[in-house]
Image (tube, rainbow, N blue to C red):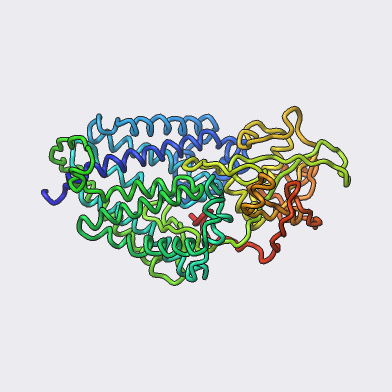
Length: 529
């Protein structure tokens, strides 16, 4: 069928498949390195306990048949190996049917992980990776030209990612409509990056330009993806540039890089002749009949499943980042329908004292990515995903987000659990575990230029109240050792607000009200399975 193939998109296919394979590699690597503390047999939210109450039809995957930490590690490290092989080009060296099996193995392995990941995997980009990984398999390999139908499905996916995010902003927080959201967002986003302080201090008119440009990029540009070339290719380039701006301004795991990869599917290599030194395109053969039939059947299935996300886009009660099926195919996306005006952070501290007095000295645990030490410039971790750090941001917004896992986390700190401590940057009790652990809610804000020069601090913080009072091992045993069913971390005592600014600070503290708005994400950073 002549209409079936689009050989001019060979470069787009190459870029999309290699970048999706790279994201798969990061996803499996993060799973392999973090799972024991988070969802392992002795983790904060153990998979076996989850599987006892959730049947296969609600969370399909390999681990419904059997679970052990050894099997999970095998799946994660095998996924790393396979995705690295695909990234290196293996899928183009094997027969077409074998290439499809490679992609299917990656998708099934990661689906199995996400469907038992619980709160730690409740992020919109998990569904985006699964949907993208499923679709790129049907781009084929160097044996055949990229199928037209699959390319259109990828554009439809990019459209939903961008247009959904644009609509939820217009329908959500008023600051998106009056162009003021970026007065707050760079400071209050889940995990600031090394340039976020500088983005925050851009002039207010430029912040307004950023918001206006965001509306154009998310509401107008995605429509252009469905127009003829070169308009579609130029629209893809605008999306790529915008996503790179977001990469520079914060840490959003692999969301931005995956969106860039998908947008590149609209790149027509023939339009780049003379502009870039491109290698010769591969010599494509005719697509076998079974592959054509498989692509057509997939396109028909995606078309039917698109009814639910399309209806959601048109709904006044639009939700973000929701999967309408347990296989995470054809999802709805979006981000930051509301923006917090203030940043509240939960800091976790321990002490060796067996009796708590007013003279007790507390030592603070330091996380890898989330703000803690006020003199530490935020680091760049994306596209790698620090799952504990992200959920700590949600805990600062509302104790309800921390209900299932925070006390189990504290219990493991009281034991100096090595798997849990590996998720942290600094353990102040390397020789022996602390006698008590507490958590304090702080108000954080970026310092201004004068404060930075005077104190060397990137942040200023003020203690608000205790998030969790001093807790020891015996107290946790009485509440089920802090595992599932324990009382929420929201039980807290009043704590006198104490300024914790660096020495020499003379700036005036911002008021502690109004409190940050809870995020309207249906999953963490958005959506609900």
